[in-house]
Length: 146
Image (cartoon, rainbow, N blue to C red):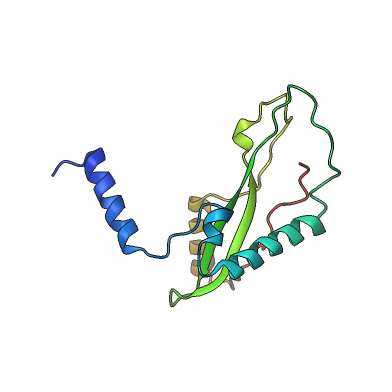
């Protein structure tokens, strides 16, 4: 069997057809869904969280010739171990790929852990019989300025 683009596309279509609960890709798509009130609440929770942390500053006039950094909403249904929807999550993300170093930003820092390190730490905790606890950060937007 040859795996080419056509085969890959056919498999992707079959997966999508079998998955009737596809995540919306925009606010307009959310509005068309029967669970729109839950998406609307998730959007409000995200906006409240960003406002609480002072992410948004005063509205200023954009100088001529300046291209604004875009944004988009990312929607996810968080599921429990029985694959039931536990909650709806909406995140407002900045499209930072349009920024230019030295013009739009000076430095970047994102404290993350890669999968290999995470697996190592879990195996270390198991082998040493250490107590492990899981924590979820509701809003990972840590006081960034837009």
